Length: 140
Image (cartoon, rainbow, N blue to C red; front, side, top):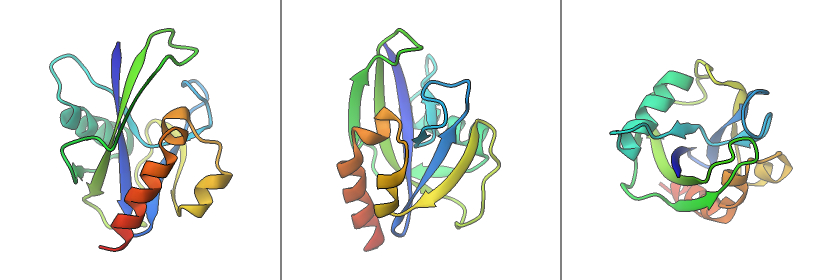
């Protein structure tokens, strides 16, 4: 089983999402940035590496535990994946656009705007948990 970590990056009442590339699993779907945990890597280490490689941003986990964990088998991969989502705090002040390395687009979305997006399963399965985290973050 492959472990994949995703960063639920929040800023006030918005979540940062990237639109997946055409050659990736779930092409052009919107998802939280992240990637596979490599051998010997911690979840948080993988998140930091992936966010830097893909977006050139630094982020810190707000909580050491994931807000959601799901297991499924993406059609193209043909191997089971455990997807863990962590709420992260960014080290830059949005709305600065990151340097996209592994996505075709990105944006900051409100809870209501999420309804109109073509969402990757890892985002769609945990939408209510993510919305609750957005609400808590907006009150800070």
